[in-house]
Length: 252
Image 1 (cartoon, rainbow, N blue to C red):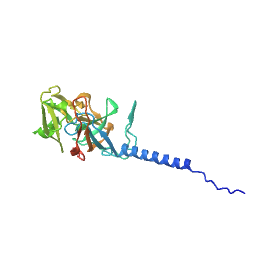
Image 2 (cartoon, helix red, strand yellow; image 1 turned 30 degrees about the vertical axis):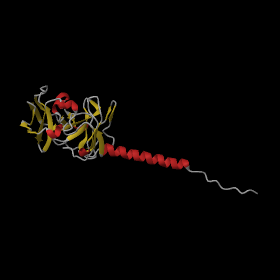
Image 3 (cartoon, one colour; image 1 turned 135 degrees about the vertical axis):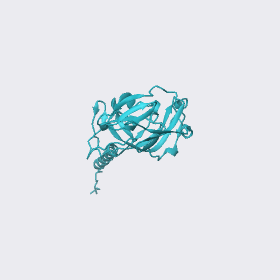
Image 4 (cartoon, rainbow, N blue to C red; image 1 turned 120 degrees about the vertical axis):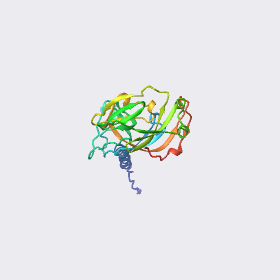
């Protein structure tokens, strides 16, 4: 009489199911983290030079102005959801660098600096910004440290650099002395629930001077830190450049 060895069937389906559930839970956790806590972004343009350079990878604090319910502010295609906050949405401060949904196309993210808050008046005279009839304090600074690794397409311009104080915020901007396209802007009052934003690369930024204010519920978060910085060769004459000195820099 032959002996038969008991064959125990492999539990591959059960193990596979566990692995799939684990992967799904990890992906879901990452998406929740990015939606409500922190999210990485890459800077694709030069509108925020000298604060942010092309190729900077930044971390955006998504709960800087209040904790949002995950996925409540998504925008894709024709769908544009307004965020739902666990408590309430706090108001950004003048000088904050924010990421927001572009009002003309909410599926696109923009990054600019907050210049004016709801109820403020904004006026520009000879490129000087007046907030509530008070000129933002500016003082010229040396161009040398900023021109060291300046993008080639901006080097051909007559750039000047300034330290700016707007409220409690202090930061640097650059201007093209030969650019007189938008030197002045008539006084406006920022509507309730809106923000006036501008790029630090003042003469090369498409911002509130051109397309208007940003609704508060379009704000996605505040830029906090540069976690990586690398520029790849491009048709603009840019060469490969790795910027380790920028890693870990706070964004002001």
